[in-house]
Image (cartoon, rainbow, N blue to C red; front, side, top):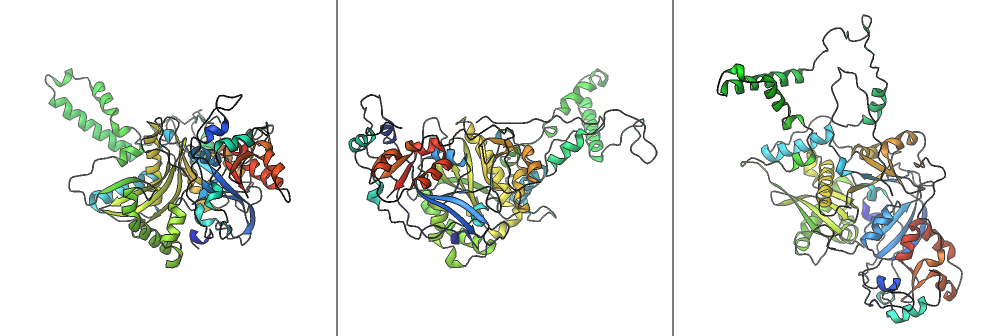
Length: 561
């Protein structure tokens, strides 16, 4: 079943703009409300907990449990803080799995692009793309398939049950004047360090150094730690005889022969007697060649193609906005590609993946675009990264650019190009893109890949993009994935923070300070409680605040009817 059936139809609302002006309030230089009114604000409608619905990972009919809320508008900073507490969006619906109850715990995973080195399998995908662009080679290497058709299947596998129609009118989402709000405000006066573990692995002297990280890197590091450095002559049939020259790889022998041949050619081409040339100098110079250095993603992506290249690939970053000319002009082609992908890969019917479903799922974003001077040139917000091959779109990566990260949302592509492993290729492009953005915005240095689901083997491949971290579901601190994997082998749900005394530093401490939008007036929850008629909703507000955290609960506006 495709993602469009996972979210019931909801009427979208335009972003809420605060038309109030910031004014000083007696006793303070600038009221908190005044600061809120000078910018876009987050307005959410809390849906609460939903349990007992189908899981797309383990095929459980009633195992899924999650919390959700509808975001009418959201700032990029609020969404950044929410995903750092385990939330994730699908369209305008923002959800968080209840980790200790759901059948397949979904751990937020982030990669560290500044320290990322492509593995052997990653390089194969990059080389395959280069070969295709240069020569049109579309051959498929055996055993080189992607573990999944897309590296962003989280939204497809999740079910979201919301009300059919929101009963909130636009007028209710527009607050009254700042003077009226400040009057209510005066009635009540109650208002991560990145972890990285470096493991030094001792190697036997005859063992060549490993520069690539592949699937088995986590296990291989443990095995190599047990290697002994004491050389003893083994018994017959018990291993290599270290008294003899070590066995050499044919690849190393070929390199040495090529180097010697190059050395001889350079020696004869120099003036003077060949005996005057220092062989060791030439050897040293050639040994420093670029070929001996590990290649980065950029070395593969930005390599110059020959003039007679068979294909041309262009990657365009397009803001998700119907006011943007590029987005509008490519909308029809992009929507058609989405439908083709959904029908071929997820077996949707045409009615399940039309333009309306495409718009609601991948074009309607609650994020308000921002373009501060210190941010990246493209600004913050939601974008489509379009892959144009010879003038047509073959893939689209939907991403959110946030203050500290690039967050992948979804990928859809032309099934005719499955042989190019576009899921892996686009992830590598997005890692490189994150590094590019970091050059202008220094705090933007992470790549969020959605959820890592260890209990689902086909979803473990996300852990191959290293170094990467998993989010502790209890204390919301980041822990290197190498430290998490042994624990996950024994239990689906784990607390990764080993400090048993550690708690959630961002937990709700004062429920009365939660911001509420009630009858177009912004007020603290303590004041709303006094005005509310009918049964108490404190349990629901307490649950909401505990999950979004104190900071977001004081900044975001929780709509109450």
